[in-house]
Structures are given as structure tokens and as C-alpha cells.
Image (cartoon, rainbow, N blue to C red; front, side, top):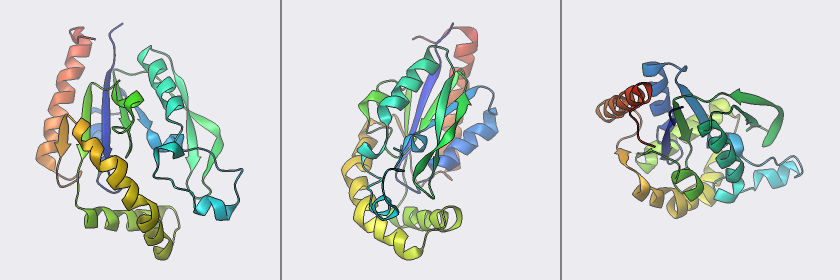
Length: 214
């Protein structure tokens, strides 16, 4: 069995990581790709009061169960399916049900901190950092959190000032140094995104032909 190709996609909150991921899925379809999103591995906070959950630092590496994600990644690489957690961002709790993820020729791991975590970064064959201006990222985050997570503008800005921006400067931005490819101007950079697509296509052919070196 040929080893899968592991692709990491990192970048600040609102940088366009999901946009790049969606471009890849539209180009190749879901059949050859398994996705591990770091957000699914946020720690369950059901033991905390709503007030304490609201004050929790979700942008620090300790907020995520990264070791479990690494174990799941290793199992996918070995050709075994895994049960990925399902996280509810409105309550900050982990659902009882899980999502089955089957092994595929391409494994994509995505999240703001995936390049800042050595246990994940060391398993990647390609490391991508999606870059975007701070004001653009903030506007996208405001829009997402209001529309998808029912949060107020006051709460979004308070969290951004208290944890999102400091953690970005401490952990996310420095992880750019680990990237093989930096996509400037966010996920809508068509030229850079197409270059990534071409590289993935080459790797897929290598997997299919059995010429990819492990």
C-alpha cells in the first residue's frame, strides 16, 4: 500500500483556509481526500459554566486535543478509519456522535495552529500558510461569528482583543516559517491556489503510479 500524501493548511483566523480547502475539494472531489480539521478537536467544556466557557482562551494550543488528532492522523496514514469528534461552537461542547473518516490518498489537516504543533507538522508532506491582512481577517471573523455562531459584535471584538490577536502574534504568525508555500492575499489568490492544485495533482499521480517516496 502506498503512503498517503499529508497536506497541512494553516493561517490566521479569517485568512481564507477554508476557501483554499473548498477550491481543492471542487477541483478533485471528496473521494481522494480525507479531512482532519483541528477545530473538531477543541476540548469539551461541558464541565464549565457558560460564564467560564465565554472566558476560555480558544486560541491557545492547550485549547485543542492535538495529541488525539495526531493519533487519528497516524491511523489514517496506516490505512485505518477513525471517528472524528463533532464540536458545537455555540455551546463549546463536544457532541456525542462522531464523524467517520476513511483513509484516502490525500489527507488534509487544517487549522490556525497546525503548523505551530510539531506533532502535526512533522507528518506533513506539504505545508501551506494562507496569509491575509489583519483588517481583512477581522472583518471575515466578525461576519462568520455573527452569521454562523450567533455572537454579538461586542463579544467578537472583546474576544479578538483579549485572545485572538495576542495568540496570533505568539503562535500563528511565527508558524509561517514552517510553511513550504505561502499564499498571500488570502484564499482568493487564484494564481497561488492553482499552483497548489497542480502540485496536488502531481502527488495524486505519484500515489496512483506507486512512485511517491515515503
